[in-house]
Length: 117
Image (cartoon, rainbow, N blue to C red):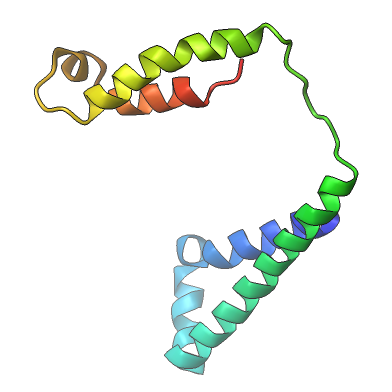
């Protein structure tokens, strides 16, 4: 599990540099050059991705159950899929009353579809 978490931190961390420290990133690109920066960025990203893949494989050997939902919730989830599909379709149509009332019916439909109570 440690390798998985380390890989996620490395991979997501390197991809968050532009958001968190854009000035630092710009200074490194100026100092190293764009090609060298991209090479180092790709190498660190690959290391993070490799750790994620390897750590996920290791974590699957000894799984940890964080939460086990009750059996009846799968039936509720199956019922929620029906309105979810209607909302997803409504999100792609123009000028519907459902879209005007809800604002983002596709977002709500996706949330219903992905829910596992």
